[in-house]
Image (cartoon, rainbow, N blue to C red; front, side, top):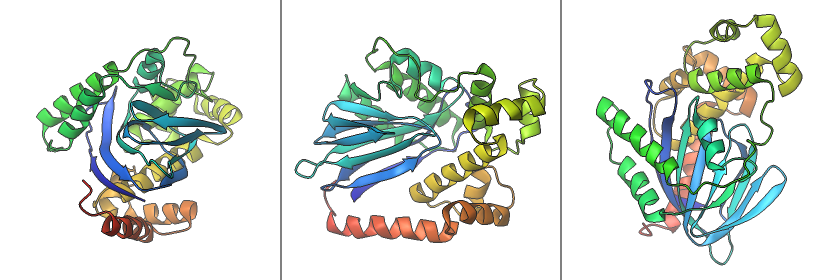
Length: 287
């Protein structure tokens, strides 16, 4: 388990690159997360200790001064070392340009672990993010600037060739980017096709052929995975999380969530909260 501090943000004006949440954690021996699939990018920066990060079937050792990236829609698992458990900071984000910037920086599924330079400034940026009022337009602009600075601090790695399992068809890449940036709206498969100026049947066909799931399944899974993430990160009501995840009817949301996770949103939150509380009692005063 871990003792952690998390701040979640809900900004609607940013599409190119948008911060979703940030946090820091002190981990206990062998504390782990996953296996899990996340709907957005997350970058962890390890400040102390070491641990193991698994991306699909590849395993990596990560220690203080290094970082690792979690790409969206990819199964990952990470675990603190038994003797020297890690502490880390993290930041989650999404946007139509997120993949482009990360590929340009060499931080992707082919190069998921990297040497983090300017660690002190990186952690300062995340610490600063905890204090901003997310309802303020000024805060939205400042946090957006901090996210760009955060990415700019990474040392470029040569030889990057894209995120693992990246769709080859540009239409599918555009569809995925659009879903990740607009899942919280009342978008449908039809409105997605219209936004991309493509025939719905054609887009649905090539998407299913390459991705192995229908567009509607992908959109639903993305929304519900994001909802599960929100349930474990903050105290917003179920109705609010339903809306943030693209559902206008909380009852429809709850039924869809239970179909996917075999547990209601309320029970899921309670389970995550109890796990966190049990460990917090053991590790109080460590921050």
